[in-house]
Image (cartoon, rainbow, N blue to C red):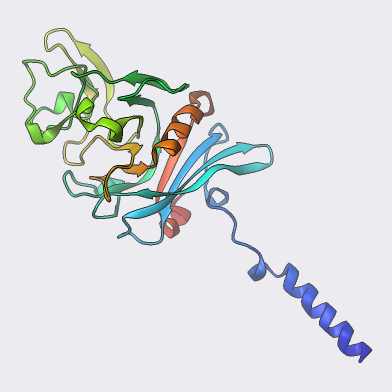
Length: 249
């Protein structure tokens, strides 16, 4: 009887330390990110076809990554995920990948953002018009007479109401070398975005069951995120199916 008891104790001990019995590590432990990146948002789901996902916010210190907000259920495009490099405009897909979060905007006043924040006025536009590649996927303060934007290829930001109460711009297909053109009275890009891939991919407030490709979360969670993001901590967002994210990053 004593020998049986000892055997059971040893067996239970081996189960406690066996790797298969340990809880799975949180997603950030699988990611390879520069040490300068100290804030991270993850948006992950089980399948490429998912239209819902789970969002969490993480901070890194000397001990590693720690969840500081979430998990929160969020909405994706009506056609689920697609790898960012394969995304095409008007497909209702959310780009999977790793992106910057350079600035924020909103129809409501700045909630205390450390990111650059612009409160929207009635003239502000976001175009993604393939016929006008110089202005493609660039926040514009108005629609100039020189623009060629069709109504289905631009967003009048104020018209989105609380959906854009606060929004964070995601660095998907953003152009570079953006400057003000006095002749066009618009911002134009030296290095243009890819006009096949679409634009206007934001982290914004959920108002419908699906998005056209953005990530949408409850207002309180978006407001918290806008306040929390700190450009000094080089925030990034990693999003896509969980298995793909773990294997890729």
